[in-house]
Length: 145
Image (cartoon, rainbow, N blue to C red):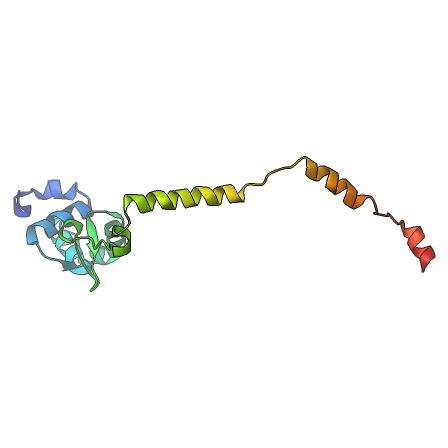
């Protein structure tokens, strides 16, 4: 259904971003935000003062709506018309299943190295270290000065 075939009453009940979606779909081209919102305003008979007042809200609406994308030159378009650039690192592609298994084994070995083992025999060694320890009170320390 073309925009001109939709009754004004129905358009007035739609959100600005839904109308903008229809405009961009029908025109099949990107638009500057002010031009897009002025088109919305014309369709639902918004006064120019209202368009100027609501342009900030319209911008926020487009930025949160996943159907739209802002392009480098400040224009807006439908996201579906723009392919997402997916960067694949060639090094990642070259990793074989065997390499992945080796990496996982290395990770497991590192985890084992990080573990702290408690040896009961260490307790006895600790006591031996303290046998020569002498505790001096403040009074004894003052006497020795």
